Image (cartoon, rainbow, N blue to C red; front, top):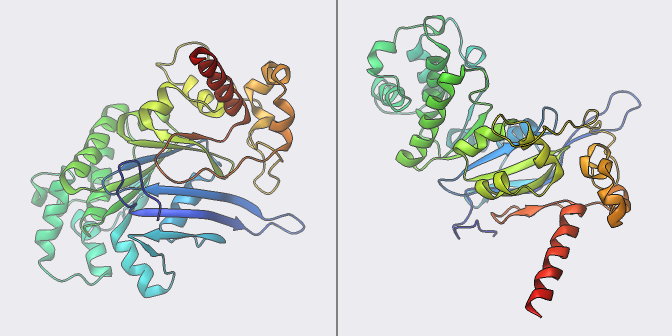
Length: 343
């Protein structure tokens, strides 16, 4: 079994994960997730970052068991995920989804109480339902909880609705939250409160979380580790401070360059990501790579490898890794210089 940076066995592991969708008439299948290894340790928050269409939401849904993989496997608490109905129901009690749009997640005809209690009823949980709902609302920051029992979603602010969605996940006492763009639909003033709530829940309950986002700035504020995804694969992964202060992959560098606090000019990537049914050979980012476009890779002699030599799937552990011929060349040059200095 693989282990994380801290040495603990992972809570959730994806190994060689593939998710494909049948193509339309005459078209090749779309490889939405095309070989992914990923670990999440107990109590760890991992940010999965990338542009729209890179496969990150499909990966998250596959980890939840909502989209069965077409290859590879998902392991939770040391056991392979069982996709039979009863086993999957039990798994989804332990791994809960928090969606981007709280308005779309909540039934407008259900009170807050019923929205939070729904999971308890689906799973047939015994015990004091009212006490469990009240505790979940309080943990989500809606206090006193009884004040919210009979309210409807339209009577709440956006931040309060998102807290209700989080309470609906917490009421089942999960071990892992999968949060898909959890603050994207919220005002800037409220985002910090929800992120602080997620961090507080990790400290209070030992929750692990996978946070799916296009925003590396959000990752900086909440994550322990970052996995950067492009066209179905993770292209760079490591501790958040390492990735955000010393990004190695040109794609990560481009994503960081558009943050408000970034120094220098933003990197404008050419074109759109390729069709996942027609993934190019070599490095799948090469057609949009600003390093290749600048001519540096041509002069170094690495450009041909970028276009023709496929890169390996990155391992799922916590070490900093990058899938990039240019970064590998720079690393070798740095090592050569260091060896020369020692000599």
